[in-house]
Length: 137
Image (cartoon, rainbow, N blue to C red):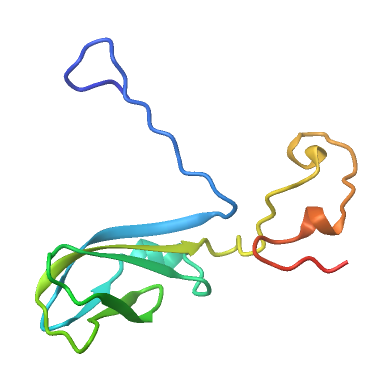
């Protein structure tokens, strides 16, 4: 995109890359008396697979007892302060998931798979193994 305040300059962003087709959401939420339930945006629930969700929390306080996720789903997750804490403070959060329909995404493929008009593809156990699955030969 064109830089909004510097003529002749552009802003270039790149996308994250990894061994999965990931989806994420992030924001800041409020812990009240040691508890919080965070409702996730509808778009996340529409694209995220339920299996393998991960939630990362960062307390925005200098005296927390620690935070834990006690329930998680594609529509919401619940956070509590450890050691029966009753803190009231904000925390940053990020939730990640594999995108629905891409649970068996393969990172390594035959070159012919990605080229239009490529030849018949030859597969081995290493070529077809989904991310995170043990290889059995």
